[in-house]
Image (cartoon, rainbow over all chains, first blue to last red; front, side):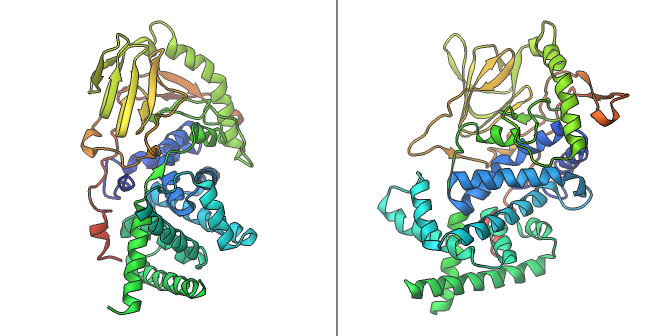
Length: 199
Length: 233
């Protein structure tokens, strides 16, 4: 599967006004929100699945994301950041919440076992198994980071947002985003190293 | 290379891998079920095209704004009349459905012949439309995503109950296909309906669907690609 569908550029006159108009209309007419929903639901689901690796969790996060966006559509500033980055930010926050809840109730090892049981799409080729497990360990480690670090990593890598869109989504400048990303990577590396020593 | 540097590269590689990992299709009806939480299924799109499967699921909304629920309720009241208007003789729905945009899509006509979907291809009732892994097909007010199968019924694409299976697992591709194919598309002719929120229902607000659908977003190419990402990370 290729990368996620890129978000419309802020400078793209053909793309963004359409989202903007729909958001304005959605405040009084749910049908407009339906259009936005269908435009973004696949991307948000894919984003959530890349983080959670389970269809059920991805669906829950997707639902929570659109529900929260629906409730807060009146607060969205159509003249500010694009709807896409705003939605991804909500999804990233929902993912953080999801893992916060998960961590409360289960150990990381238990989560991994449950995911292996739940995910029917585990790679079948033996060469890929090790890499899959490595990615899973990394995603587990990511859930131990502070929320802002989780956000920047998921938005930049799992949502495949450009630096510009990720900065808009996180409501910061590109240099700040770069610094945050660097720190997040370092923190992730530390957690993974620690976990590796434990094993 | 030091252990620290190698670890950093490894993590970046793992993140890249995770970001490009195939996404299995959600279970059938999952998106419709989620949409059902917002009561969106009672209304028709007023602008642009919508992806097939506009919510018809049950509503499990919690604490939704009263004004939006009111608007949905009124829209539902008008929905019946609107649906009748769109499906009756002489209505827009009675006109032949045609492909507006298509990529990696196969059409099986009622006579059994199979052709590649192309812009302007008329889709009579009974036609089956199948999109490939990177496919997309827009016809009428429906935007059919990848790896789906739909039939034309009463002048509208309707999703079949089973999602096309692939081996080993169906993959949800949200790459959107060829951006060049996302040209301006002609949608259904104009129709005027009246929709008003319950709270201010004294004077219904006329809303007109566009005679020409809005242009699909022209996505930039390559700006989110991994090669362009490296420098800014």
